Image 1 (tube, rainbow over the protein chains, first blue to last red):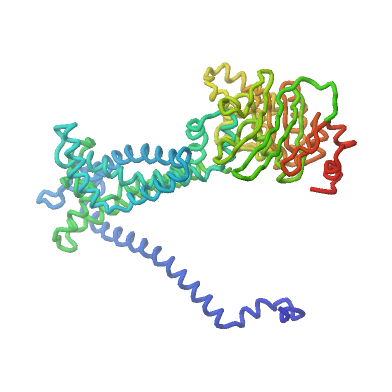
Image 2: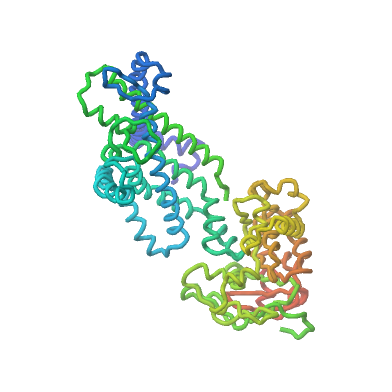
Length: 311
Length: 259
């Protein structure tokens, strides 16, 4: 304390700088933190680098137009076709089924937990819900194959043993906790003053929830939906187990089909010679997957900015 | 309380007490609210004036553990607003409220004003257009927003937002309008506009206003109540309260020796 008096304007910083040990440990911590950040960035860069560089070889052999427009995906046959739309259709159909389940259900649960349930119910329900998100997806896959498909076959007798519908439904259930949990956080962040304003107008709880809280939390809801889409598009095991793996260009969820992810699993498990065209399809498919996810992420960022609320 | 030739009663608190859980926040308050007059509630922070105000539209019902004792009689029908048999939503249909911080909904200007009407089941566009315009004129905002009714309300300035909230409350023709420190988040010019508006509004609606600002109470109100530690210390005509308060505590507060 007394040192800092009358000894010029640099007293404090000089004293800090002269403590060599502290200086060193500060630097060390800073470097550790930077390294941690760098690892994740470099990993992403590395993944993109590998995908792009291998895909370049692939596209030297297969024209991009064929890749996008061909209606068959038979990379391992003698008469090889590389129409990625075959896999994209499976991915999009199964994701759409999943989202049709997950978005209404997750949002409803979030509205209930945030606006209606009493605190004790919420304290129990939320962890249980989040537990659902921790179940390994392979378990969900077998649940789809052995429980949901037979049940669905009672309603639709013509449903095959593997279908996008069954896998998509279960994938939707898997995603519900993500949407419910994130949406509930977003809705609880809506200031009480807005709700009070609505109640003071003679509004009911449901009316307040739908007409005030949901619009006010919309950017958060949109973010949770986008995360859900990314999860659905990238989900692998449920589809590999329950959706069948045959490439099938279809928009009908009642059919079996391969998705981008389940194709990659299938091929990566086989013994493909390194550097062969079949081997390179993995990277082209992977790159397509990343681009789809990226597109949805950009859409999500845009939605968040557009609907951000200033309370 | 002096005997005067007072106007008709709009509401009356009778032996009103209020509890946040165990804590007694209001203690046996008796007070008349006169029809088409402005009544100001003043007192230091934590004296219970907002708690008292929020009893009139049963806002406390939103939170668990709150309890009322006593009555608030509402006239001409002599309903006890606090009776468990009275639906708080019915109460809020008749008693409007404007909050401390402007709280427009994340909707357009038009939809903000139409909100209460839609809650009441009104969906006829002609009727809505009409009432929205009337309410915005009543809130002294019409000329500023008539060309951009479908802009987001959050794009308005703070003072405009608060007048929008007043218009929103007016749209449903409330009988009693509660103001909870409506100008504490506003600059002096916006404050002046709101005060002028309050003065204008008392022609058609009874007003109860909580304020921290004693000049404001003196400027806008016909009657003033001084509260301290959950008790109603003094109630009377504003001129009398400010010129010759009966209670020493009121005098101390008004002259700035306390609070």
